[in-house]
Image (tube, rainbow, N blue to C red; front, side, top):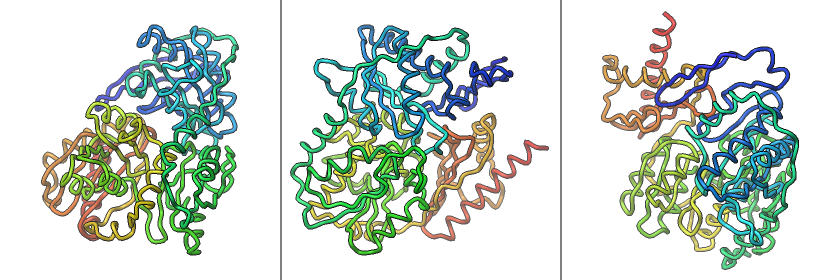
Length: 488
């Protein structure tokens, strides 16, 4: 096996030629080590050898940062192979001399929550959530927290290089200490939202057969909120629809329920319940729109948005607070919140981070009750949405490329935009905090490299659909020219 390290746009990529030993589970594709987390196909990439070493090497990193660390809390999502991954991961952690606090089947936010509370005298210094999030059923992965901060970027890449260079084996030892993080989390939510008086309203919830279903019903019952829950039972086969509420096609069932007129609002969740969709009978409110609504009820707010957020969000929040544009990715936003002491952060996809009255991580369950709180206070989502400036925004348009070329293409695009084609729309500004966001006279266009897939992600917004199409055509044509030049 040969390994080489190359750099593209500041990203470290491990390239390797994998020999026939992959069939024995000894080596795997380095692409599982990603910007925000670790993710791959069970057995094919996330095999016993690799997963044990992920536990081992993370435990070693934790001890470097927190010398007196003793415990790592571990939870897992509804995927069929998650319990097996938990056993392998625990073996690695135990082999490194730390112990596992096992919280079982929980939403990702419960795993994050475990970093901030005590369990009968036991407290963790880091956590690992076993989850494939919204990926297809054969995928799984790990979202990692170290001393209350995300473990990501170069930390993950460096750990990946150590793992790939290690030819040793780790024995089985999946012993752990069970903790009841789920009930401690639910008690916290109930205590903080016991003031809600929503008996006259009724809501529909779509858990998508993910892990939101392990806490949602009890929370709603304890808070006397009328509900109808779709696909509540966790099932890693996801038999009803893909667990990704940012994809409109997955919202067919909840929209059908809302169309009956029986429910005031609907809430949908991704597989591990760190992303939310909020729908009325008329509208689907994306994360950047919700950022506007929530921030209005925070004194002098500082709000972090990603590069895909609408310009409307930045412009409005800057009239009564401060809006900061930053990189896409839950780990990036959590770090930026801490750096700026921001009140809130949002991604268009539904990652919502409350640092106001909460801990600054993305939690779709907590966000649900903050949204219900606004309803309880008489906030009219539809009327407030109708009052916003009118713009046309495209959905994300993804372009398939390769892991090796995606960051190189972005670099080439930046160079091309310094001397664009003669008929290219007039450029007012270029923001390169994450990919390229080109500001035009009447809108903007974004091209960025996905940190989790071999794709370029594009999005366009303008005052009219026609102008958005002009910007889309211009940028995509320039990308095509760049691609053709590379192939010549």
